[in-house]
Length: 125
Image 1 (cartoon, rainbow, N blue to C red):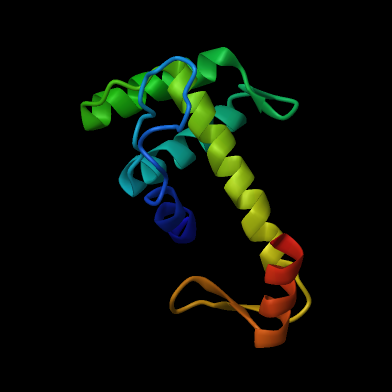
Image 2: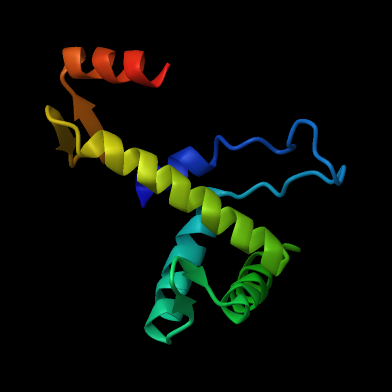
C-alpha cells in the first residue's frame, strides 16, 4: 500500500481538456490508506460484483472519507479514483512479475536488473 500511496500523490489536480470544466479531486496518500481497507470491508459485505463495486459501496465510501477528512468527494469521485488505483496496481504488478524483478522490503520498492529495466522501458515507450 505504501507504494500506491506514493504513486497517488503524483496525480494531477486538473485533467487537460476536461469536458465538464471541473477540476479533478486531489487524493492524498492518507485518503488512500483509509479508502482501501474500507473497500476491502465492502467486498466482505458482498458489495462487489464482477470487476467493480455496487453503487452503494461508492456512496458509503464517499460519506466515510468525507466524514473522516472533511472533504467533499462524491460517489463518482470515489469510483473514478478506484479505477485509477486499479490501473496503477495492474501496471505495478506487470513490472513486479517480470523475470529479473525483485522486491526491497526495507524500502517497499520493486528492484529490477538494469537490463530488464532498459528492455521494459524500450517496450513501453
